[in-house]
Image (cartoon, rainbow, N blue to C red; front, side):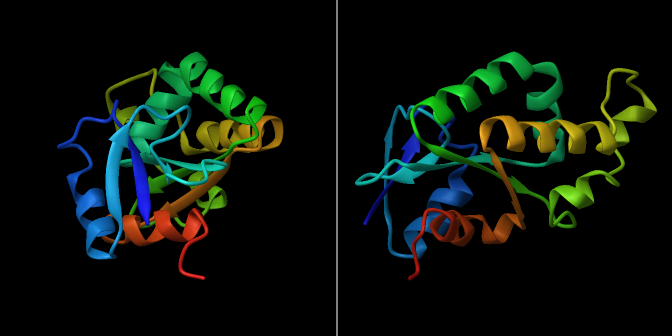
Length: 152
């Protein structure tokens, strides 16, 4: 089976994900996706958008909020289930995000707290149907396939 990867992703940024997917037996083709970073070539009703860590999701939710929100709206209007998959060693759920300590708060007054991010994530789930998932970096390829409905 073929998994599509958004061509707007820098190839070196997610090399570990491509390698994991290929090791699982999937071919990865790059093209511009309507939403997210990964989806099936044959069915794009579910798209997974990967985030390298909590810092990246903070940047998306706080500093690039309008752009991120527009992608969520676009996916919802197109009938695409958008799943945000955040790579983190400790966080397992949005509930855990509320207690996350943002190290950037030590030097940046604009840094968001875990509580703030948790509230934004909850609101985006309610308003746009965005699902939030978490996994370890070494499990991201397998988790993408699971979220797309593979391994059945």
